[in-house]
Length: 355
Picture 1 (cartoon, rainbow, N blue to C red):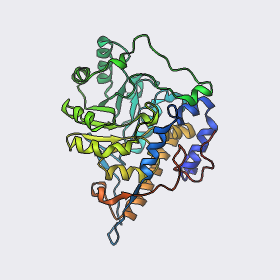
Picture 2: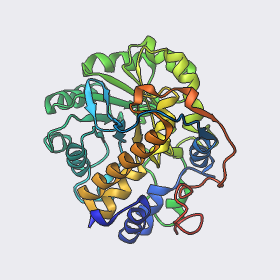
Picture 3: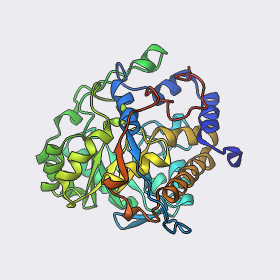
């Protein structure tokens, strides 16, 4: 069935058929007014491409190397909580799909199955993302399990200090976010990061960085990857779009760490814009879940194949044959032609949103 998905639109529409309202709203919505969610898309739409011509583009290479791993395209799958709501095998399905395609998944600590089962699925490298849900004894136990399971790198998410107000799933009757008696996530500091980094003993990715100041601090504390993210517009409302924050973060990092970006990445051209601005890779959350919901492992593989095809086409038309040729000179400012919303990257999906 996945071979019938010639573009992203039928994948999204098939996913909608298979998901109940609360799961759909949890996936596609943002927090409060969803302004940050829309700014993610608006930021990408305000960037135009500047193609060069009369260059030999008969061979185009979309691959890259990230944390020592070869990626077929510079796309990670982002950590999505409760991924089992979109496919019964949850994180294990994402691990299998990325292994088949040739990239790396980042597995959320709040998705099923247990981390050991996901780690043993597929042959490829995998990254584990941790939310802090206990004291230092709990942290030591978790980091020990992560290392023993064979994950190749570690991600700490730092933009979820307190629960956000995601109104769409609340209105449609979704579960109210749990507010723990002791919110360990809210107690994290740079000193805690230092302790955690020593305990983990793996390449360390810091997810949720949105300013040059915090990017500079991350590098000073020895972080290997600065992950530019506003949680897909699902945490702080009225924040900036991820791609709008990228230039200042690239400047602050100054080549001392690798950089990942997520937020509104829906097309191959979005990936190329991020790479041209200095990111080493991007991550997909909603696209990942739509693919898994539509057709399981094969659906996510198809999502990645479509992104690859879009990248190959755009790179050839831009006059570049490898990602390392991209830079800011291939971009310029432009006026967007579509009002941004969660479906605005796909003109063949009617209406502003799918109810």
